[in-house]
Image (cartoon, rainbow, N blue to C red; front, side, top):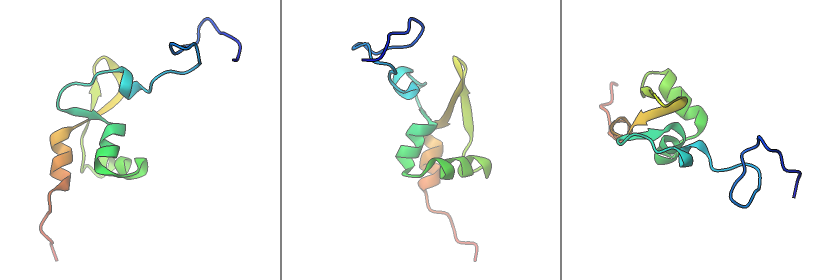
Length: 87
């Protein structure tokens, strides 16, 4: 095992690291983190960012942790619905 650092976050077995932020923090009901939304939609991080940039998906900030970006579950369901072809 590597050297112990007193200011480093350790898991229960004293290894460096820990759980990802999405697993540590409970998000508000009706919201998913960006990573969870990516998995739900089955898209890449780049595609998720493109959806946000093109205003097809609105993001929210968690008031407890401003770094955490959240997506409404209902917005994800809206993205899955078919839209009329404008041809």
